[in-house]
Image 1 (cartoon, chains in turn yellow, purple):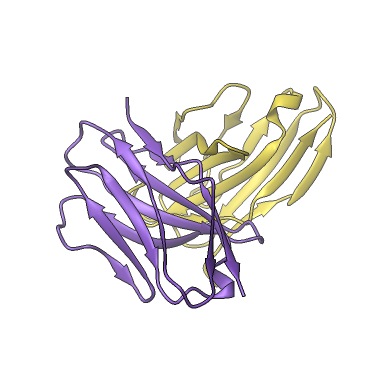
Image 2 (cartoon, rainbow over the protein chains, first blue to last red):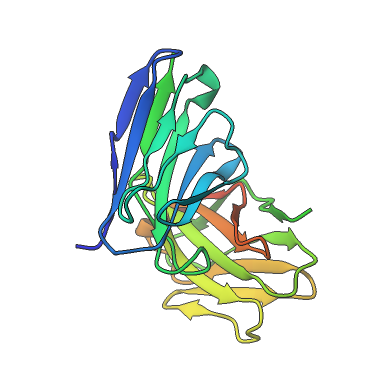
Length: 113
Length: 113
């Protein structure tokens, strides 16, 4: 089954404790991206990747890191999480670029205390 | 600046009736792509419909259709024969020249049995 998976689905952590949210797709997609969703703000892009070893900032990259060492994986790293990073996070992928239909993962609910 | 506006935070419709969700945008680009995404209570983001700005014909997908008015910069979604399963948050989204998917703030649709 073609899908985008994210882990964990739920995470409660404390300020400053490094964490990684994994994202994996099995569709051989080139384009992958991360979004955060906050009430009243819709979804905002954090980082995106056009292909392996190619990443770029979205609208709200501060406090986040990403890497794209393999085509299928695009982890989101919070080196020192803060309460303002409490949010719902989505990973998405598409075949040949952002203009192609994007497939979203199920979301990760992160709470930073 | 490129902006996307959904002016209706909440809407409701009687089951089997028709409802229209509005979305307006502002851009100086001439080539762009427009989308409507649905987010049911499961939080999964699901593509409902896609429209290319260069196409004059409005896109349709079964009970879902758009009214794309390029000169007015309006992109509304019409849902016909509303069903209980249509209850969700609906987001319009655009890809302008910078190859970034920009979302509106969403409209919560309630279906009244």
